[in-house]
Length: 499
Image (cartoon, rainbow, N blue to C red; front, side, top):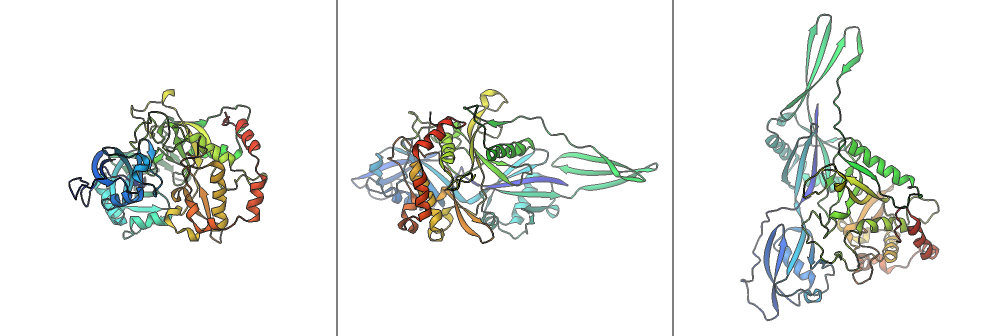
């Protein structure tokens, strides 16, 4: 049996198809209109707007040309995050360039990786079914597997040909889905004197690797199987610790160990298409489950190796005022440390920030514009956060379905951290226990603890739960917090973050 993994992820299409044209030549030129340029997917597109237009109205105009699930506009290194502000409030003037970061929701990028390391990529519309995916595998594989021999499996369930790609994604609630492509092996038996040999041929693509077992009559319980050797290690993963006399908590040791086992098994990181920085989904030993997310500091938004094409920060300021490029990973870890548990000796914080640790990591799948070599210069430092299984984000569900206490716990965290980037997309939804109670998980804290509070935004402020008073338990938790103790915790932590 030959095994190949098929990964699906949202794709930013490089050649965009428009339903109309961005042109200053259409319509009258009003006195307060300005001509701006949208930089997207390597193209620069002119667009005429009014100085008095709100950011929301500009995004709406863009929406009439693009089928876009969500947009992010960046000008002069700053995200235009407040939809109610006007264009002129951000200093956008005639001739300026706005960078449009978007994700097209109607396509999936499919990567087929075989057991022998071969890789094929193609794009599939989410309206296509599994049968179409099989046809693409046959076409790209060029003899790798016949259509009738294929069996696609997801989470132990065989996928029928009429199943839609979109439905598979919604069911799993994940940005990336892993599938198995199985091909029947050929079994041949031949006699050799009083013995016989069983030869199993499992071909991947055009490479034929035979696993030969020799059985002697009368002793069929001890086959002599030649196993394939794993490739030599060409990756690195270890904790990044400043304060050497402080030991890592057990949960963080386990997080690093499970991630290391996946890399050691040959399960490559998968770069997420979500977000404006480099984020890599790390798999476990089996390759079927995600265990963590790695965010290198040199691939943060506006950093030197950012894979999304954002401009380099000239003064070091991040996309949110009061933050610095390259500090996002530290802030992610600080958010986890400061999420003080409500119950003593509990590993889970009050708001439920996933366990996060700073690590040094090196792998050829990361973004290396000058090429990859296994040398110290290519070692990346970043945050490693535990992957939490979820059914989507708060963008996918109306806020009225969220329990009041779950929203309140995130509000307490955001106020404490002065979070400059809390929106529905970075609050995951999980179902807890057999009763299926909704639990909210806050992630993406790279813009918390800013130097000033000018850009702080909390989407939950507009949810109905924000109008309800805190429960006595939440009030007691707030009263138990001590800023000086929390500062000391950062100061003596394994990172020395308070410094």
